[in-house]
Length: 45
Image 1: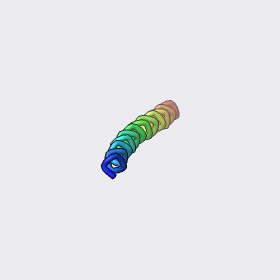
Image 2 (image 1 turned 60 degrees about the vertical axis):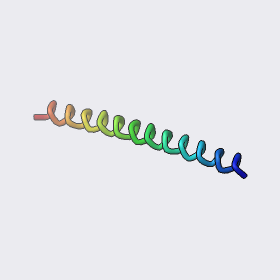
Image 3 (image 1 turned 45 degrees about the vertical axis):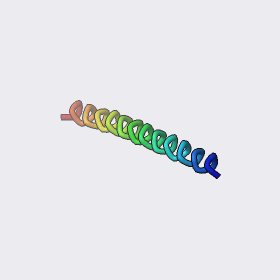
Image 4 (image 1 turned 180 degrees about the vertical axis):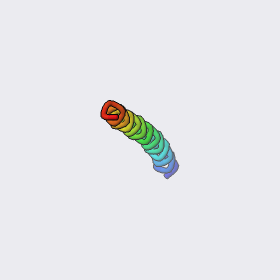
């Protein structure tokens, strides 16, 4: 039983780490896309 609990904790930690990395990736992609839009607007002005 203890092994199952331990495995669950390890899984939960991995999932949290994955989630954090995914959020970081999404944020950096959104920032890059936003910068691209701003650049295009600046060219038009």
